[in-house]
Image (cartoon, rainbow, N blue to C red; front, side, top):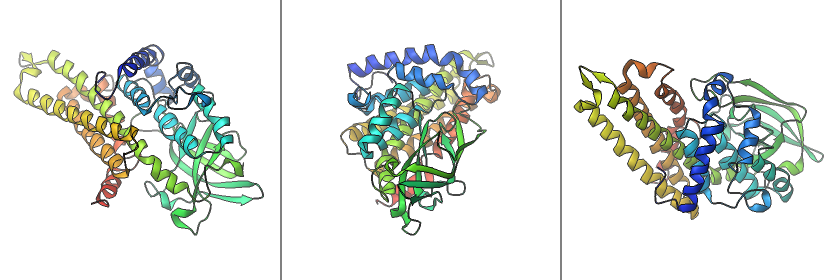
Length: 378
């Protein structure tokens, strides 16, 4: 994983530093964070101090001006090492680009440097109860009142919802205009009328805080809008390929880790007087998984190469998410099977990969939506 051709020497050095950070600052706390349902807020500050937040930001906004490959390395190492549930990809790969690419100078100067240090944790609120992947069906509204927007509505399944200091809210500024009535507005968490709901109880990814958010007559300055009013849906469509590619890399790293720990297990576990790796069925299953993982890395690296050149389109992003997450599901299921009864025990790491992986085919757009997006280009 560390020596793939898509990365150069600078990236390899960075990867080593990222891995050491997670091993020291996150891995020892994995169980306590999982039990708590979130990582401590101060962990975000440690991430910022280590330079692991928003590395793609220009120096003027607190970043190092790196390309998206640095983000991918952080995602790969966090998942491979099961290094806590801070949704770094949401913060760095998804939220920051909306501000950097479309935000006003005021928003960029006020928020981006603080995102790089971990002083401000970002979230994005698209999904609503009852809408799921249907972004055009959102009901949250923002109505202009003087020089403020008044935001009303609710969102759910929001990553970083408990820890966030601000959230980019997708809302309707014109309910009669369909997708052209969607806007993106920054809502700071300390504004009156903003309320966090419960930290949702999930079947996996337990240390990642995922929340309901409520907006009751929340007044925000008109200057908090990202880009132009009514252009929010277009911005979402432009940024979703990177979001889906990030999920693809997370899927690949999760599949690689599941395979690696299973390979160690089948070499050590004995049945009928010999290691289960000696059975042909086990070798064939391991060979199939190894091949699929190698194909997956080649595919996402190809997509990454296209993306850093600005050539990854919506269909390409959808394909990267569809194939890798479906493959991850197949791999972790097979790995559980090869662990036998122990694969169903929470004390074994593979069980957590199984439950953590399931949502990969849902968030960021379901596999069915990915197929629809790809199908429209045929």
